[in-house]
Image 1 (cartoon, rainbow, N blue to C red):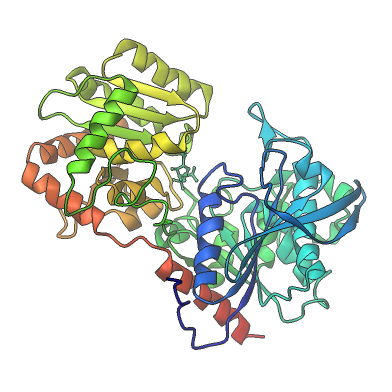
Image 2 (tube, rainbow, N blue to C red):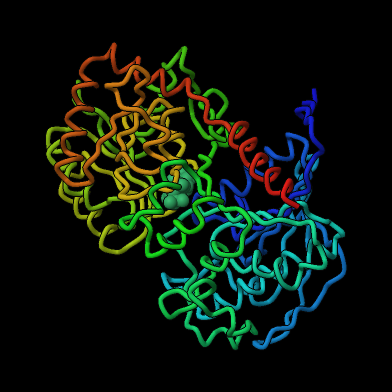
Length: 490
Ligand code: ADP
Protein backbone atom coordinates (compact mmCIF):
# COMPACT_ATOMS: atom_id res chain seq x y z
CA UNK A 1 0.00 0.00 0.00
CA UNK A 2 1.26 3.48 -0.80
CA UNK A 3 1.84 5.77 2.11
CA UNK A 4 -0.22 8.97 2.15
CA UNK A 5 1.98 12.04 2.50
CA UNK A 6 1.66 13.75 5.87
CA UNK A 7 -0.89 16.56 5.77
CA UNK A 8 0.59 20.02 5.63
CA UNK A 9 -1.70 22.72 6.92
CA UNK A 10 0.27 25.53 5.26
CA UNK A 11 1.01 25.45 1.52
CA UNK A 12 3.71 23.07 0.39
CA UNK A 13 7.10 24.65 -0.25
CA UNK A 14 9.36 24.45 -3.28
CA UNK A 15 12.87 23.71 -2.12
CA UNK A 16 16.00 23.76 -4.26
CA UNK A 17 18.54 21.66 -2.35
CA UNK A 18 22.15 21.89 -3.58
CA UNK A 19 24.76 19.45 -2.30
CA UNK A 20 28.18 18.38 -3.55
CA UNK A 21 27.52 14.76 -2.52
CA UNK A 22 24.39 12.66 -2.22
CA UNK A 23 24.15 9.03 -1.03
CA UNK A 24 24.25 6.59 -2.79
CA UNK A 25 25.67 8.37 -5.85
CA UNK A 26 28.66 10.11 -4.25
CA UNK A 27 29.89 10.23 -0.68
CA UNK A 28 32.85 11.27 1.42
CA UNK A 29 31.00 11.87 4.70
CA UNK A 30 27.80 12.52 6.59
CA UNK A 31 26.76 15.36 4.24
CA UNK A 32 25.92 12.76 1.59
CA UNK A 33 23.61 10.88 3.97
CA UNK A 34 21.82 14.10 4.92
CA UNK A 35 21.54 15.22 1.29
CA UNK A 36 19.65 12.05 0.49
CA UNK A 37 17.52 11.54 3.59
CA UNK A 38 16.44 15.12 4.39
CA UNK A 39 15.08 15.91 0.89
CA UNK A 40 13.38 12.49 0.85
CA UNK A 41 11.64 13.24 4.16
CA UNK A 42 10.68 16.79 3.08
CA UNK A 43 9.15 15.31 -0.08
CA UNK A 44 7.33 12.70 2.01
CA UNK A 45 5.91 15.52 4.11
CA UNK A 46 4.41 16.96 0.92
CA UNK A 47 6.98 19.56 -0.21
CA UNK A 48 8.40 19.75 -3.73
CA UNK A 49 12.12 19.17 -3.63
CA UNK A 50 14.67 19.55 -6.41
CA UNK A 51 18.09 18.21 -5.38
CA UNK A 52 20.99 19.31 -7.58
CA UNK A 53 24.35 17.58 -7.35
CA UNK A 54 27.40 17.07 -9.60
CA UNK A 55 27.75 14.05 -11.80
CA UNK A 56 31.39 13.26 -11.04
CA UNK A 57 33.12 10.69 -13.24
CA UNK A 58 32.58 8.12 -10.47
CA UNK A 59 28.79 8.65 -10.32
CA UNK A 60 26.98 5.81 -12.03
CA UNK A 61 23.36 6.67 -12.83
CA UNK A 62 22.45 4.73 -15.97
CA UNK A 63 18.72 5.32 -15.31
CA UNK A 64 19.02 9.10 -15.18
CA UNK A 65 17.46 10.65 -18.27
CA UNK A 66 18.51 13.90 -19.96
CA UNK A 67 16.29 16.86 -19.03
CA UNK A 68 16.15 20.45 -20.28
CA UNK A 69 18.39 21.88 -22.96
CA UNK A 70 22.16 22.00 -22.42
CA UNK A 71 23.30 25.50 -21.43
CA UNK A 72 26.63 27.33 -21.36
CA UNK A 73 28.07 29.17 -18.35
CA UNK A 74 30.77 31.75 -18.96
CA UNK A 75 33.48 32.64 -16.43
CA UNK A 76 36.82 34.38 -16.90
CA UNK A 77 38.40 30.94 -16.46
CA UNK A 78 36.45 29.54 -19.40
CA UNK A 79 33.14 28.48 -20.85
CA UNK A 80 31.43 25.31 -19.72
CA UNK A 81 28.59 23.48 -21.36
CA UNK A 82 26.27 21.96 -18.74
CA UNK A 83 24.00 19.00 -19.33
CA UNK A 84 21.34 17.86 -16.89
CA UNK A 85 20.22 14.33 -16.07
CA UNK A 86 17.38 13.50 -13.70
CA UNK A 87 15.99 10.74 -11.54
CA UNK A 88 12.66 10.78 -9.73
CA UNK A 89 13.12 8.30 -6.91
CA UNK A 90 9.83 9.18 -5.16
CA UNK A 91 6.86 11.52 -5.40
CA UNK A 92 7.76 15.23 -5.06
CA UNK A 93 11.49 14.48 -5.26
CA UNK A 94 13.68 15.02 -8.30
CA UNK A 95 17.45 14.61 -8.29
CA UNK A 96 19.25 16.48 -11.03
CA UNK A 97 22.85 15.65 -11.89
CA UNK A 98 24.96 18.42 -13.34
CA UNK A 99 27.27 17.10 -16.01
CA UNK A 100 30.00 19.45 -17.12
CA UNK A 101 33.64 18.74 -18.04
CA UNK A 102 35.34 20.26 -15.00
CA UNK A 103 33.14 18.27 -12.60
CA UNK A 104 32.49 15.15 -14.62
CA UNK A 105 35.69 14.29 -16.43
CA UNK A 106 37.46 13.30 -13.24
CA UNK A 107 36.45 10.47 -10.91
CA UNK A 108 37.10 12.23 -7.59
CA UNK A 109 34.77 14.58 -5.75
CA UNK A 110 37.33 17.04 -4.41
CA UNK A 111 40.67 15.50 -5.27
CA UNK A 112 42.62 12.34 -5.83
CA UNK A 113 45.46 10.48 -4.13
CA UNK A 114 45.04 12.58 -1.00
CA UNK A 115 45.46 15.92 -2.82
CA UNK A 116 42.76 18.47 -3.57
CA UNK A 117 42.18 19.34 -7.23
CA UNK A 118 44.00 22.57 -8.15
CA UNK A 119 40.83 24.09 -9.62
CA UNK A 120 38.27 23.39 -6.88
CA UNK A 121 37.43 27.09 -6.60
CA UNK A 122 36.43 27.05 -10.26
CA UNK A 123 34.68 23.67 -10.09
CA UNK A 124 32.41 24.74 -7.22
CA UNK A 125 31.78 28.27 -8.48
CA UNK A 126 30.64 26.49 -11.60
CA UNK A 127 28.52 24.00 -9.64
CA UNK A 128 26.77 26.78 -7.69
CA UNK A 129 25.84 28.69 -10.84
CA UNK A 130 24.89 25.47 -12.61
CA UNK A 131 22.54 24.49 -9.75
CA UNK A 132 20.70 27.84 -9.96
CA UNK A 133 20.63 27.82 -13.75
CA UNK A 134 19.41 24.20 -13.77
CA UNK A 135 16.41 25.10 -11.62
CA UNK A 136 15.68 28.04 -13.89
CA UNK A 137 16.03 25.87 -17.01
CA UNK A 138 13.61 23.35 -15.50
CA UNK A 139 11.17 26.13 -14.56
CA UNK A 140 11.45 25.33 -10.87
CA UNK A 141 10.84 28.56 -8.96
CA UNK A 142 12.11 27.94 -5.43
CA UNK A 143 10.75 29.42 -2.23
CA UNK A 144 13.95 28.34 -0.55
CA UNK A 145 17.42 27.57 -1.83
CA UNK A 146 19.02 25.24 0.69
CA UNK A 147 22.83 25.20 0.38
CA UNK A 148 25.25 22.87 2.12
CA UNK A 149 28.85 23.54 3.15
CA UNK A 150 31.51 25.57 1.35
CA UNK A 151 30.98 23.91 -2.01
CA UNK A 152 27.69 25.80 -2.32
CA UNK A 153 28.83 28.87 -0.35
CA UNK A 154 28.69 31.27 -3.32
CA UNK A 155 25.03 30.47 -4.04
CA UNK A 156 23.50 32.77 -1.36
CA UNK A 157 25.66 35.57 -2.77
CA UNK A 158 24.49 34.82 -6.33
CA UNK A 159 20.89 34.90 -5.07
CA UNK A 160 21.44 38.36 -3.64
CA UNK A 161 23.00 39.60 -6.90
CA UNK A 162 22.53 37.85 -10.28
CA UNK A 163 19.35 36.06 -9.19
CA UNK A 164 17.73 38.88 -7.22
CA UNK A 165 15.42 39.79 -10.08
CA UNK A 166 14.94 36.24 -11.33
CA UNK A 167 13.50 34.90 -8.07
CA UNK A 168 12.73 37.95 -5.91
CA UNK A 169 10.79 35.80 -3.42
CA UNK A 170 13.46 33.14 -2.89
CA UNK A 171 15.31 32.95 0.43
CA UNK A 172 18.49 31.03 1.20
CA UNK A 173 19.57 28.70 3.97
CA UNK A 174 23.10 27.41 4.41
CA UNK A 175 23.71 24.32 6.52
CA UNK A 176 27.15 23.90 8.08
CA UNK A 177 27.95 20.20 8.21
CA UNK A 178 31.50 20.78 9.39
CA UNK A 179 33.02 24.21 10.01
CA UNK A 180 36.53 22.76 9.62
CA UNK A 181 36.11 22.74 5.83
CA UNK A 182 35.96 26.34 4.70
CA UNK A 183 36.75 26.45 0.97
CA UNK A 184 39.70 28.81 1.34
CA UNK A 185 41.48 29.95 -1.83
CA UNK A 186 44.08 32.60 -2.75
CA UNK A 187 42.53 36.03 -3.16
CA UNK A 188 43.72 36.38 -6.78
CA UNK A 189 41.09 33.76 -7.63
CA UNK A 190 38.57 36.60 -7.47
CA UNK A 191 39.74 37.71 -10.92
CA UNK A 192 39.69 34.16 -12.24
CA UNK A 193 36.13 33.74 -11.01
CA UNK A 194 34.93 37.18 -12.07
CA UNK A 195 33.93 38.22 -8.56
CA UNK A 196 34.11 41.98 -7.82
CA UNK A 197 36.88 43.11 -5.47
CA UNK A 198 34.39 45.27 -3.59
CA UNK A 199 33.13 42.01 -2.00
CA UNK A 200 36.61 41.26 -0.62
CA UNK A 201 36.08 42.83 2.81
CA UNK A 202 35.97 41.62 6.42
CA UNK A 203 32.19 41.66 6.21
CA UNK A 204 32.31 39.78 2.92
CA UNK A 205 34.43 37.16 1.21
CA UNK A 206 37.71 37.97 2.93
CA UNK A 207 39.03 35.47 5.43
CA UNK A 208 42.44 36.17 6.97
CA UNK A 209 43.72 37.59 3.66
CA UNK A 210 42.23 34.79 1.57
CA UNK A 211 38.92 34.09 -0.07
CA UNK A 212 36.51 31.70 1.70
CA UNK A 213 33.46 30.19 0.01
CA UNK A 214 32.05 29.10 3.34
CA UNK A 215 32.30 32.62 4.67
CA UNK A 216 30.41 33.90 1.62
CA UNK A 217 27.58 31.56 2.58
CA UNK A 218 27.76 32.50 6.27
CA UNK A 219 27.53 36.19 5.42
CA UNK A 220 24.94 36.19 2.63
CA UNK A 221 22.57 33.32 3.49
CA UNK A 222 19.29 34.50 5.00
CA UNK A 223 19.41 31.72 7.60
CA UNK A 224 22.13 29.41 8.84
CA UNK A 225 21.73 26.02 10.37
CA UNK A 226 24.13 23.46 11.68
CA UNK A 227 23.60 19.84 12.46
CA UNK A 228 23.16 19.80 16.24
CA UNK A 229 22.17 22.33 18.91
CA UNK A 230 25.44 21.89 20.84
CA UNK A 231 27.57 22.45 17.74
CA UNK A 232 25.58 25.63 17.02
CA UNK A 233 26.78 26.95 20.40
CA UNK A 234 30.32 25.56 20.16
CA UNK A 235 31.12 27.21 16.81
CA UNK A 236 30.58 30.60 18.40
CA UNK A 237 33.53 29.97 20.73
CA UNK A 238 37.25 30.23 20.07
CA UNK A 239 38.17 26.57 20.72
CA UNK A 240 35.72 25.19 18.15
CA UNK A 241 35.01 28.22 15.96
CA UNK A 242 37.90 27.35 13.59
CA UNK A 243 38.66 31.04 13.08
CA UNK A 244 35.03 31.72 12.09
CA UNK A 245 33.77 32.32 15.66
CA UNK A 246 33.51 36.08 15.07
CA UNK A 247 31.29 35.56 12.01
CA UNK A 248 29.26 32.94 13.86
CA UNK A 249 28.69 35.32 16.78
CA UNK A 250 27.70 38.11 14.41
CA UNK A 251 25.21 35.78 12.70
CA UNK A 252 24.02 34.01 15.87
CA UNK A 253 20.54 35.53 15.50
CA UNK A 254 19.97 33.60 12.25
CA UNK A 255 21.75 30.39 13.32
CA UNK A 256 19.91 27.30 14.53
CA UNK A 257 21.12 23.79 15.42
CA UNK A 258 18.99 20.92 14.12
CA UNK A 259 20.31 17.44 14.80
CA UNK A 260 20.64 15.11 11.84
CA UNK A 261 18.36 12.15 11.50
CA UNK A 262 19.05 8.59 10.49
CA UNK A 263 17.73 7.02 7.32
CA UNK A 264 15.74 4.37 9.18
CA UNK A 265 14.96 2.51 5.98
CA UNK A 266 18.67 1.81 5.62
CA UNK A 267 19.59 1.58 9.29
CA UNK A 268 17.11 -0.74 11.00
CA UNK A 269 18.46 -3.99 12.47
CA UNK A 270 15.03 -5.66 12.12
CA UNK A 271 15.02 -5.27 8.32
CA UNK A 272 18.66 -4.67 7.33
CA UNK A 273 19.40 -6.73 4.22
CA UNK A 274 23.15 -6.26 4.69
CA UNK A 275 23.10 -8.32 7.91
CA UNK A 276 23.36 -12.11 8.07
CA UNK A 277 20.86 -12.12 10.99
CA UNK A 278 18.27 -9.57 12.02
CA UNK A 279 17.21 -8.50 15.49
CA UNK A 280 15.24 -5.99 17.53
CA UNK A 281 15.15 -4.56 21.04
CA UNK A 282 12.67 -7.32 22.00
CA UNK A 283 14.91 -10.11 20.74
CA UNK A 284 18.64 -9.51 20.53
CA UNK A 285 19.59 -13.14 19.77
CA UNK A 286 20.25 -12.15 16.14
CA UNK A 287 22.80 -9.63 17.46
CA UNK A 288 24.79 -12.43 19.09
CA UNK A 289 24.73 -14.30 15.77
CA UNK A 290 25.93 -11.11 14.04
CA UNK A 291 28.82 -10.94 16.51
CA UNK A 292 29.83 -14.49 15.59
CA UNK A 293 29.64 -13.53 11.89
CA UNK A 294 31.66 -10.35 12.49
CA UNK A 295 34.43 -12.20 14.34
CA UNK A 296 34.51 -14.88 11.63
CA UNK A 297 34.78 -12.25 8.92
CA UNK A 298 37.50 -10.46 10.90
CA UNK A 299 39.24 -13.79 11.58
CA UNK A 300 39.34 -13.07 15.30
CA UNK A 301 38.65 -15.65 18.02
CA UNK A 302 35.78 -14.82 20.43
CA UNK A 303 36.88 -12.75 23.44
CA UNK A 304 37.18 -14.40 26.88
CA UNK A 305 34.00 -14.20 29.00
CA UNK A 306 33.37 -10.74 30.43
CA UNK A 307 35.34 -8.90 27.74
CA UNK A 308 33.61 -7.05 24.89
CA UNK A 309 34.00 -6.55 21.17
CA UNK A 310 34.55 -2.89 20.36
CA UNK A 311 33.71 -1.32 17.01
CA UNK A 312 35.27 1.78 15.42
CA UNK A 313 34.23 3.26 12.05
CA UNK A 314 35.14 6.56 10.49
CA UNK A 315 37.56 8.84 8.79
CA UNK A 316 41.01 8.52 10.37
CA UNK A 317 41.67 12.22 10.91
CA UNK A 318 42.60 14.40 13.90
CA UNK A 319 38.95 15.33 14.48
CA UNK A 320 37.98 11.74 15.24
CA UNK A 321 40.46 11.26 18.14
CA UNK A 322 42.26 8.28 16.58
CA UNK A 323 45.32 9.05 18.74
CA UNK A 324 43.15 8.72 21.85
CA UNK A 325 41.97 5.28 20.72
CA UNK A 326 45.51 4.14 19.95
CA UNK A 327 46.61 5.39 23.37
CA UNK A 328 43.75 4.09 25.53
CA UNK A 329 42.70 0.76 24.02
CA UNK A 330 45.86 -1.42 24.22
CA UNK A 331 45.61 -2.42 27.92
CA UNK A 332 42.07 -3.79 27.36
CA UNK A 333 43.14 -5.56 24.18
CA UNK A 334 46.09 -7.11 25.97
CA UNK A 335 43.54 -8.62 28.37
CA UNK A 336 41.62 -10.10 25.41
CA UNK A 337 38.99 -7.53 24.39
CA UNK A 338 38.58 -7.32 20.61
CA UNK A 339 38.36 -4.31 18.34
CA UNK A 340 37.21 -4.24 14.73
CA UNK A 341 38.18 -1.04 12.92
CA UNK A 342 37.03 0.32 9.55
CA UNK A 343 38.10 3.57 7.91
CA UNK A 344 40.81 5.41 6.09
CA UNK A 345 42.55 8.75 6.28
CA UNK A 346 45.86 10.15 7.46
CA UNK A 347 48.83 7.82 6.92
CA UNK A 348 50.02 8.22 10.54
CA UNK A 349 46.70 6.89 11.88
CA UNK A 350 46.34 4.12 9.32
CA UNK A 351 49.92 3.05 10.24
CA UNK A 352 49.15 3.34 13.96
CA UNK A 353 46.24 0.89 13.62
CA UNK A 354 48.30 -1.43 11.42
CA UNK A 355 51.08 -1.52 13.99
CA UNK A 356 48.60 -2.33 16.78
CA UNK A 357 47.10 -5.08 14.62
CA UNK A 358 50.59 -6.55 13.98
CA UNK A 359 51.32 -6.51 17.73
CA UNK A 360 47.97 -8.02 18.81
CA UNK A 361 46.82 -10.01 15.77
CA UNK A 362 44.20 -12.07 17.64
CA UNK A 363 42.56 -8.99 19.17
CA UNK A 364 42.67 -6.27 16.52
CA UNK A 365 41.36 -6.28 12.97
CA UNK A 366 41.76 -3.20 10.83
CA UNK A 367 40.19 -2.70 7.42
CA UNK A 368 41.52 0.33 5.59
CA UNK A 369 38.92 1.39 3.07
CA UNK A 370 35.25 2.06 2.62
CA UNK A 371 32.78 -0.80 3.04
CA UNK A 372 29.07 -0.32 3.68
CA UNK A 373 28.37 -3.99 4.40
CA UNK A 374 31.17 -4.20 6.96
CA UNK A 375 30.02 -0.92 8.56
CA UNK A 376 26.57 -2.41 9.13
CA UNK A 377 28.04 -5.67 10.44
CA UNK A 378 30.32 -3.85 12.90
CA UNK A 379 27.38 -1.89 14.31
CA UNK A 380 25.37 -5.12 14.57
CA UNK A 381 28.16 -7.27 16.01
CA UNK A 382 29.92 -4.91 18.43
CA UNK A 383 29.08 -4.66 22.14
CA UNK A 384 30.37 -1.08 22.25
CA UNK A 385 31.05 1.53 19.59
CA UNK A 386 33.78 4.08 20.38
CA UNK A 387 33.73 7.63 19.01
CA UNK A 388 36.08 9.94 20.93
CA UNK A 389 35.85 12.87 18.47
CA UNK A 390 37.51 16.12 19.58
CA UNK A 391 34.67 17.94 17.88
CA UNK A 392 31.66 16.46 16.14
CA UNK A 393 29.07 18.58 14.32
CA UNK A 394 26.51 15.78 14.64
CA UNK A 395 27.98 12.37 13.86
CA UNK A 396 25.88 9.52 12.55
CA UNK A 397 27.63 6.39 13.74
CA UNK A 398 26.78 6.95 17.40
CA UNK A 399 23.10 7.01 16.39
CA UNK A 400 23.41 3.90 14.20
CA UNK A 401 25.22 2.17 17.05
CA UNK A 402 22.42 2.87 19.53
CA UNK A 403 19.81 1.52 17.11
CA UNK A 404 22.00 -1.57 16.56
CA UNK A 405 22.62 -2.23 20.26
CA UNK A 406 26.31 -1.31 20.20
CA UNK A 407 26.44 0.90 23.30
CA UNK A 408 28.31 4.09 22.30
CA UNK A 409 31.31 5.46 24.20
CA UNK A 410 31.56 9.11 23.18
CA UNK A 411 33.23 12.40 24.05
CA UNK A 412 30.69 14.95 25.34
CA UNK A 413 30.85 17.31 22.39
CA UNK A 414 28.57 18.55 19.60
CA UNK A 415 26.05 16.08 18.29
CA UNK A 416 27.54 13.25 20.38
CA UNK A 417 26.47 15.09 23.51
CA UNK A 418 23.01 15.77 22.04
CA UNK A 419 22.28 12.18 21.01
CA UNK A 420 23.84 10.02 23.74
CA UNK A 421 23.08 10.32 27.45
CA UNK A 422 25.41 8.86 30.04
CA UNK A 423 24.59 5.65 31.93
CA UNK A 424 24.46 7.63 35.16
CA UNK A 425 21.27 9.34 33.86
CA UNK A 426 17.82 7.78 34.07
CA UNK A 427 17.63 7.67 30.25
CA UNK A 428 21.30 6.65 29.84
CA UNK A 429 22.11 4.93 26.56
CA UNK A 430 25.92 5.16 26.47
CA UNK A 431 29.13 6.13 28.21
CA UNK A 432 29.82 9.85 27.84
CA UNK A 433 33.16 11.33 28.91
CA UNK A 434 34.11 14.96 29.23
CA UNK A 435 37.88 15.04 28.79
CA UNK A 436 39.23 14.31 25.31
CA UNK A 437 42.51 12.81 26.53
CA UNK A 438 43.94 9.30 26.63
CA UNK A 439 43.21 9.22 30.38
CA UNK A 440 39.68 10.48 29.86
CA UNK A 441 38.97 7.74 27.34
CA UNK A 442 40.71 5.15 29.54
CA UNK A 443 38.37 6.01 32.44
CA UNK A 444 35.38 5.81 30.08
CA UNK A 445 36.52 2.36 28.93
CA UNK A 446 36.75 1.25 32.59
CA UNK A 447 33.18 2.41 33.15
CA UNK A 448 32.09 0.58 29.99
CA UNK A 449 33.76 -2.62 31.19
CA UNK A 450 32.03 -2.36 34.57
CA UNK A 451 28.72 -1.95 32.76
CA UNK A 452 29.44 -4.95 30.54
CA UNK A 453 30.12 -7.11 33.57
CA UNK A 454 26.63 -6.34 34.88
CA UNK A 455 24.56 -7.98 32.10
CA UNK A 456 21.18 -6.81 33.41
CA UNK A 457 22.26 -3.18 33.46
CA UNK A 458 24.08 -3.49 30.15
CA UNK A 459 20.92 -4.89 28.46
CA UNK A 460 18.83 -2.06 29.91
CA UNK A 461 21.21 0.58 28.54
CA UNK A 462 21.38 -1.25 25.21
CA UNK A 463 17.56 -1.47 24.96
CA UNK A 464 17.14 2.21 25.74
CA UNK A 465 19.46 3.07 22.84
CA UNK A 466 17.63 0.70 20.51
CA UNK A 467 14.30 2.32 21.39
CA UNK A 468 15.46 5.84 20.51
CA UNK A 469 13.74 7.71 17.71
CA UNK A 470 16.43 9.19 15.46
CA UNK A 471 14.23 9.40 12.37
CA UNK A 472 14.19 12.44 10.10
CA UNK A 473 10.52 13.26 10.73
CA UNK A 474 11.10 15.79 13.54
CA UNK A 475 14.32 17.37 12.18
CA UNK A 476 12.70 17.81 8.74
CA UNK A 477 9.82 19.67 10.41
CA UNK A 478 12.38 21.90 12.14
CA UNK A 479 13.88 22.76 8.75
CA UNK A 480 10.41 23.60 7.46
CA UNK A 481 10.01 25.96 10.46
CA UNK A 482 13.24 27.70 9.43
CA UNK A 483 12.05 27.97 5.81
CA UNK A 484 8.65 29.33 6.80
CA UNK A 485 10.04 31.89 9.19
CA UNK A 486 12.18 33.25 6.33
CA UNK A 487 9.28 33.40 3.95
CA UNK A 488 7.21 35.37 6.45
CA UNK A 489 9.78 38.18 6.13
CA UNK A 490 9.31 38.45 2.34
P1 ADP B 1 31.83 12.49 9.01
O1 ADP B 1 30.79 13.15 8.15
O2 ADP B 1 32.61 13.46 9.87
O3 ADP B 1 32.75 11.60 8.24
P2 ADP B 1 29.59 11.10 10.27
O4 ADP B 1 29.56 10.15 11.42
O5 ADP B 1 28.68 12.27 10.32
O6 ADP B 1 31.11 11.54 10.07
O7 ADP B 1 29.23 10.31 8.95
C1 ADP B 1 30.07 9.37 8.41
C2 ADP B 1 29.26 8.48 7.50
O8 ADP B 1 30.15 7.72 6.69
C3 ADP B 1 28.45 7.47 8.22
O9 ADP B 1 27.34 7.11 7.43
C4 ADP B 1 29.45 6.30 8.37
O10 ADP B 1 28.81 5.08 8.60
C5 ADP B 1 30.10 6.33 7.06
N1 ADP B 1 31.46 5.84 7.00
C6 ADP B 1 32.58 6.49 7.36
N2 ADP B 1 33.67 5.76 7.08
C7 ADP B 1 33.24 4.62 6.53
C8 ADP B 1 33.89 3.46 5.99
N3 ADP B 1 35.21 3.34 6.00
N4 ADP B 1 33.14 2.48 5.47
C9 ADP B 1 31.79 2.59 5.46
N5 ADP B 1 31.12 3.66 5.95
C10 ADP B 1 31.83 4.65 6.46
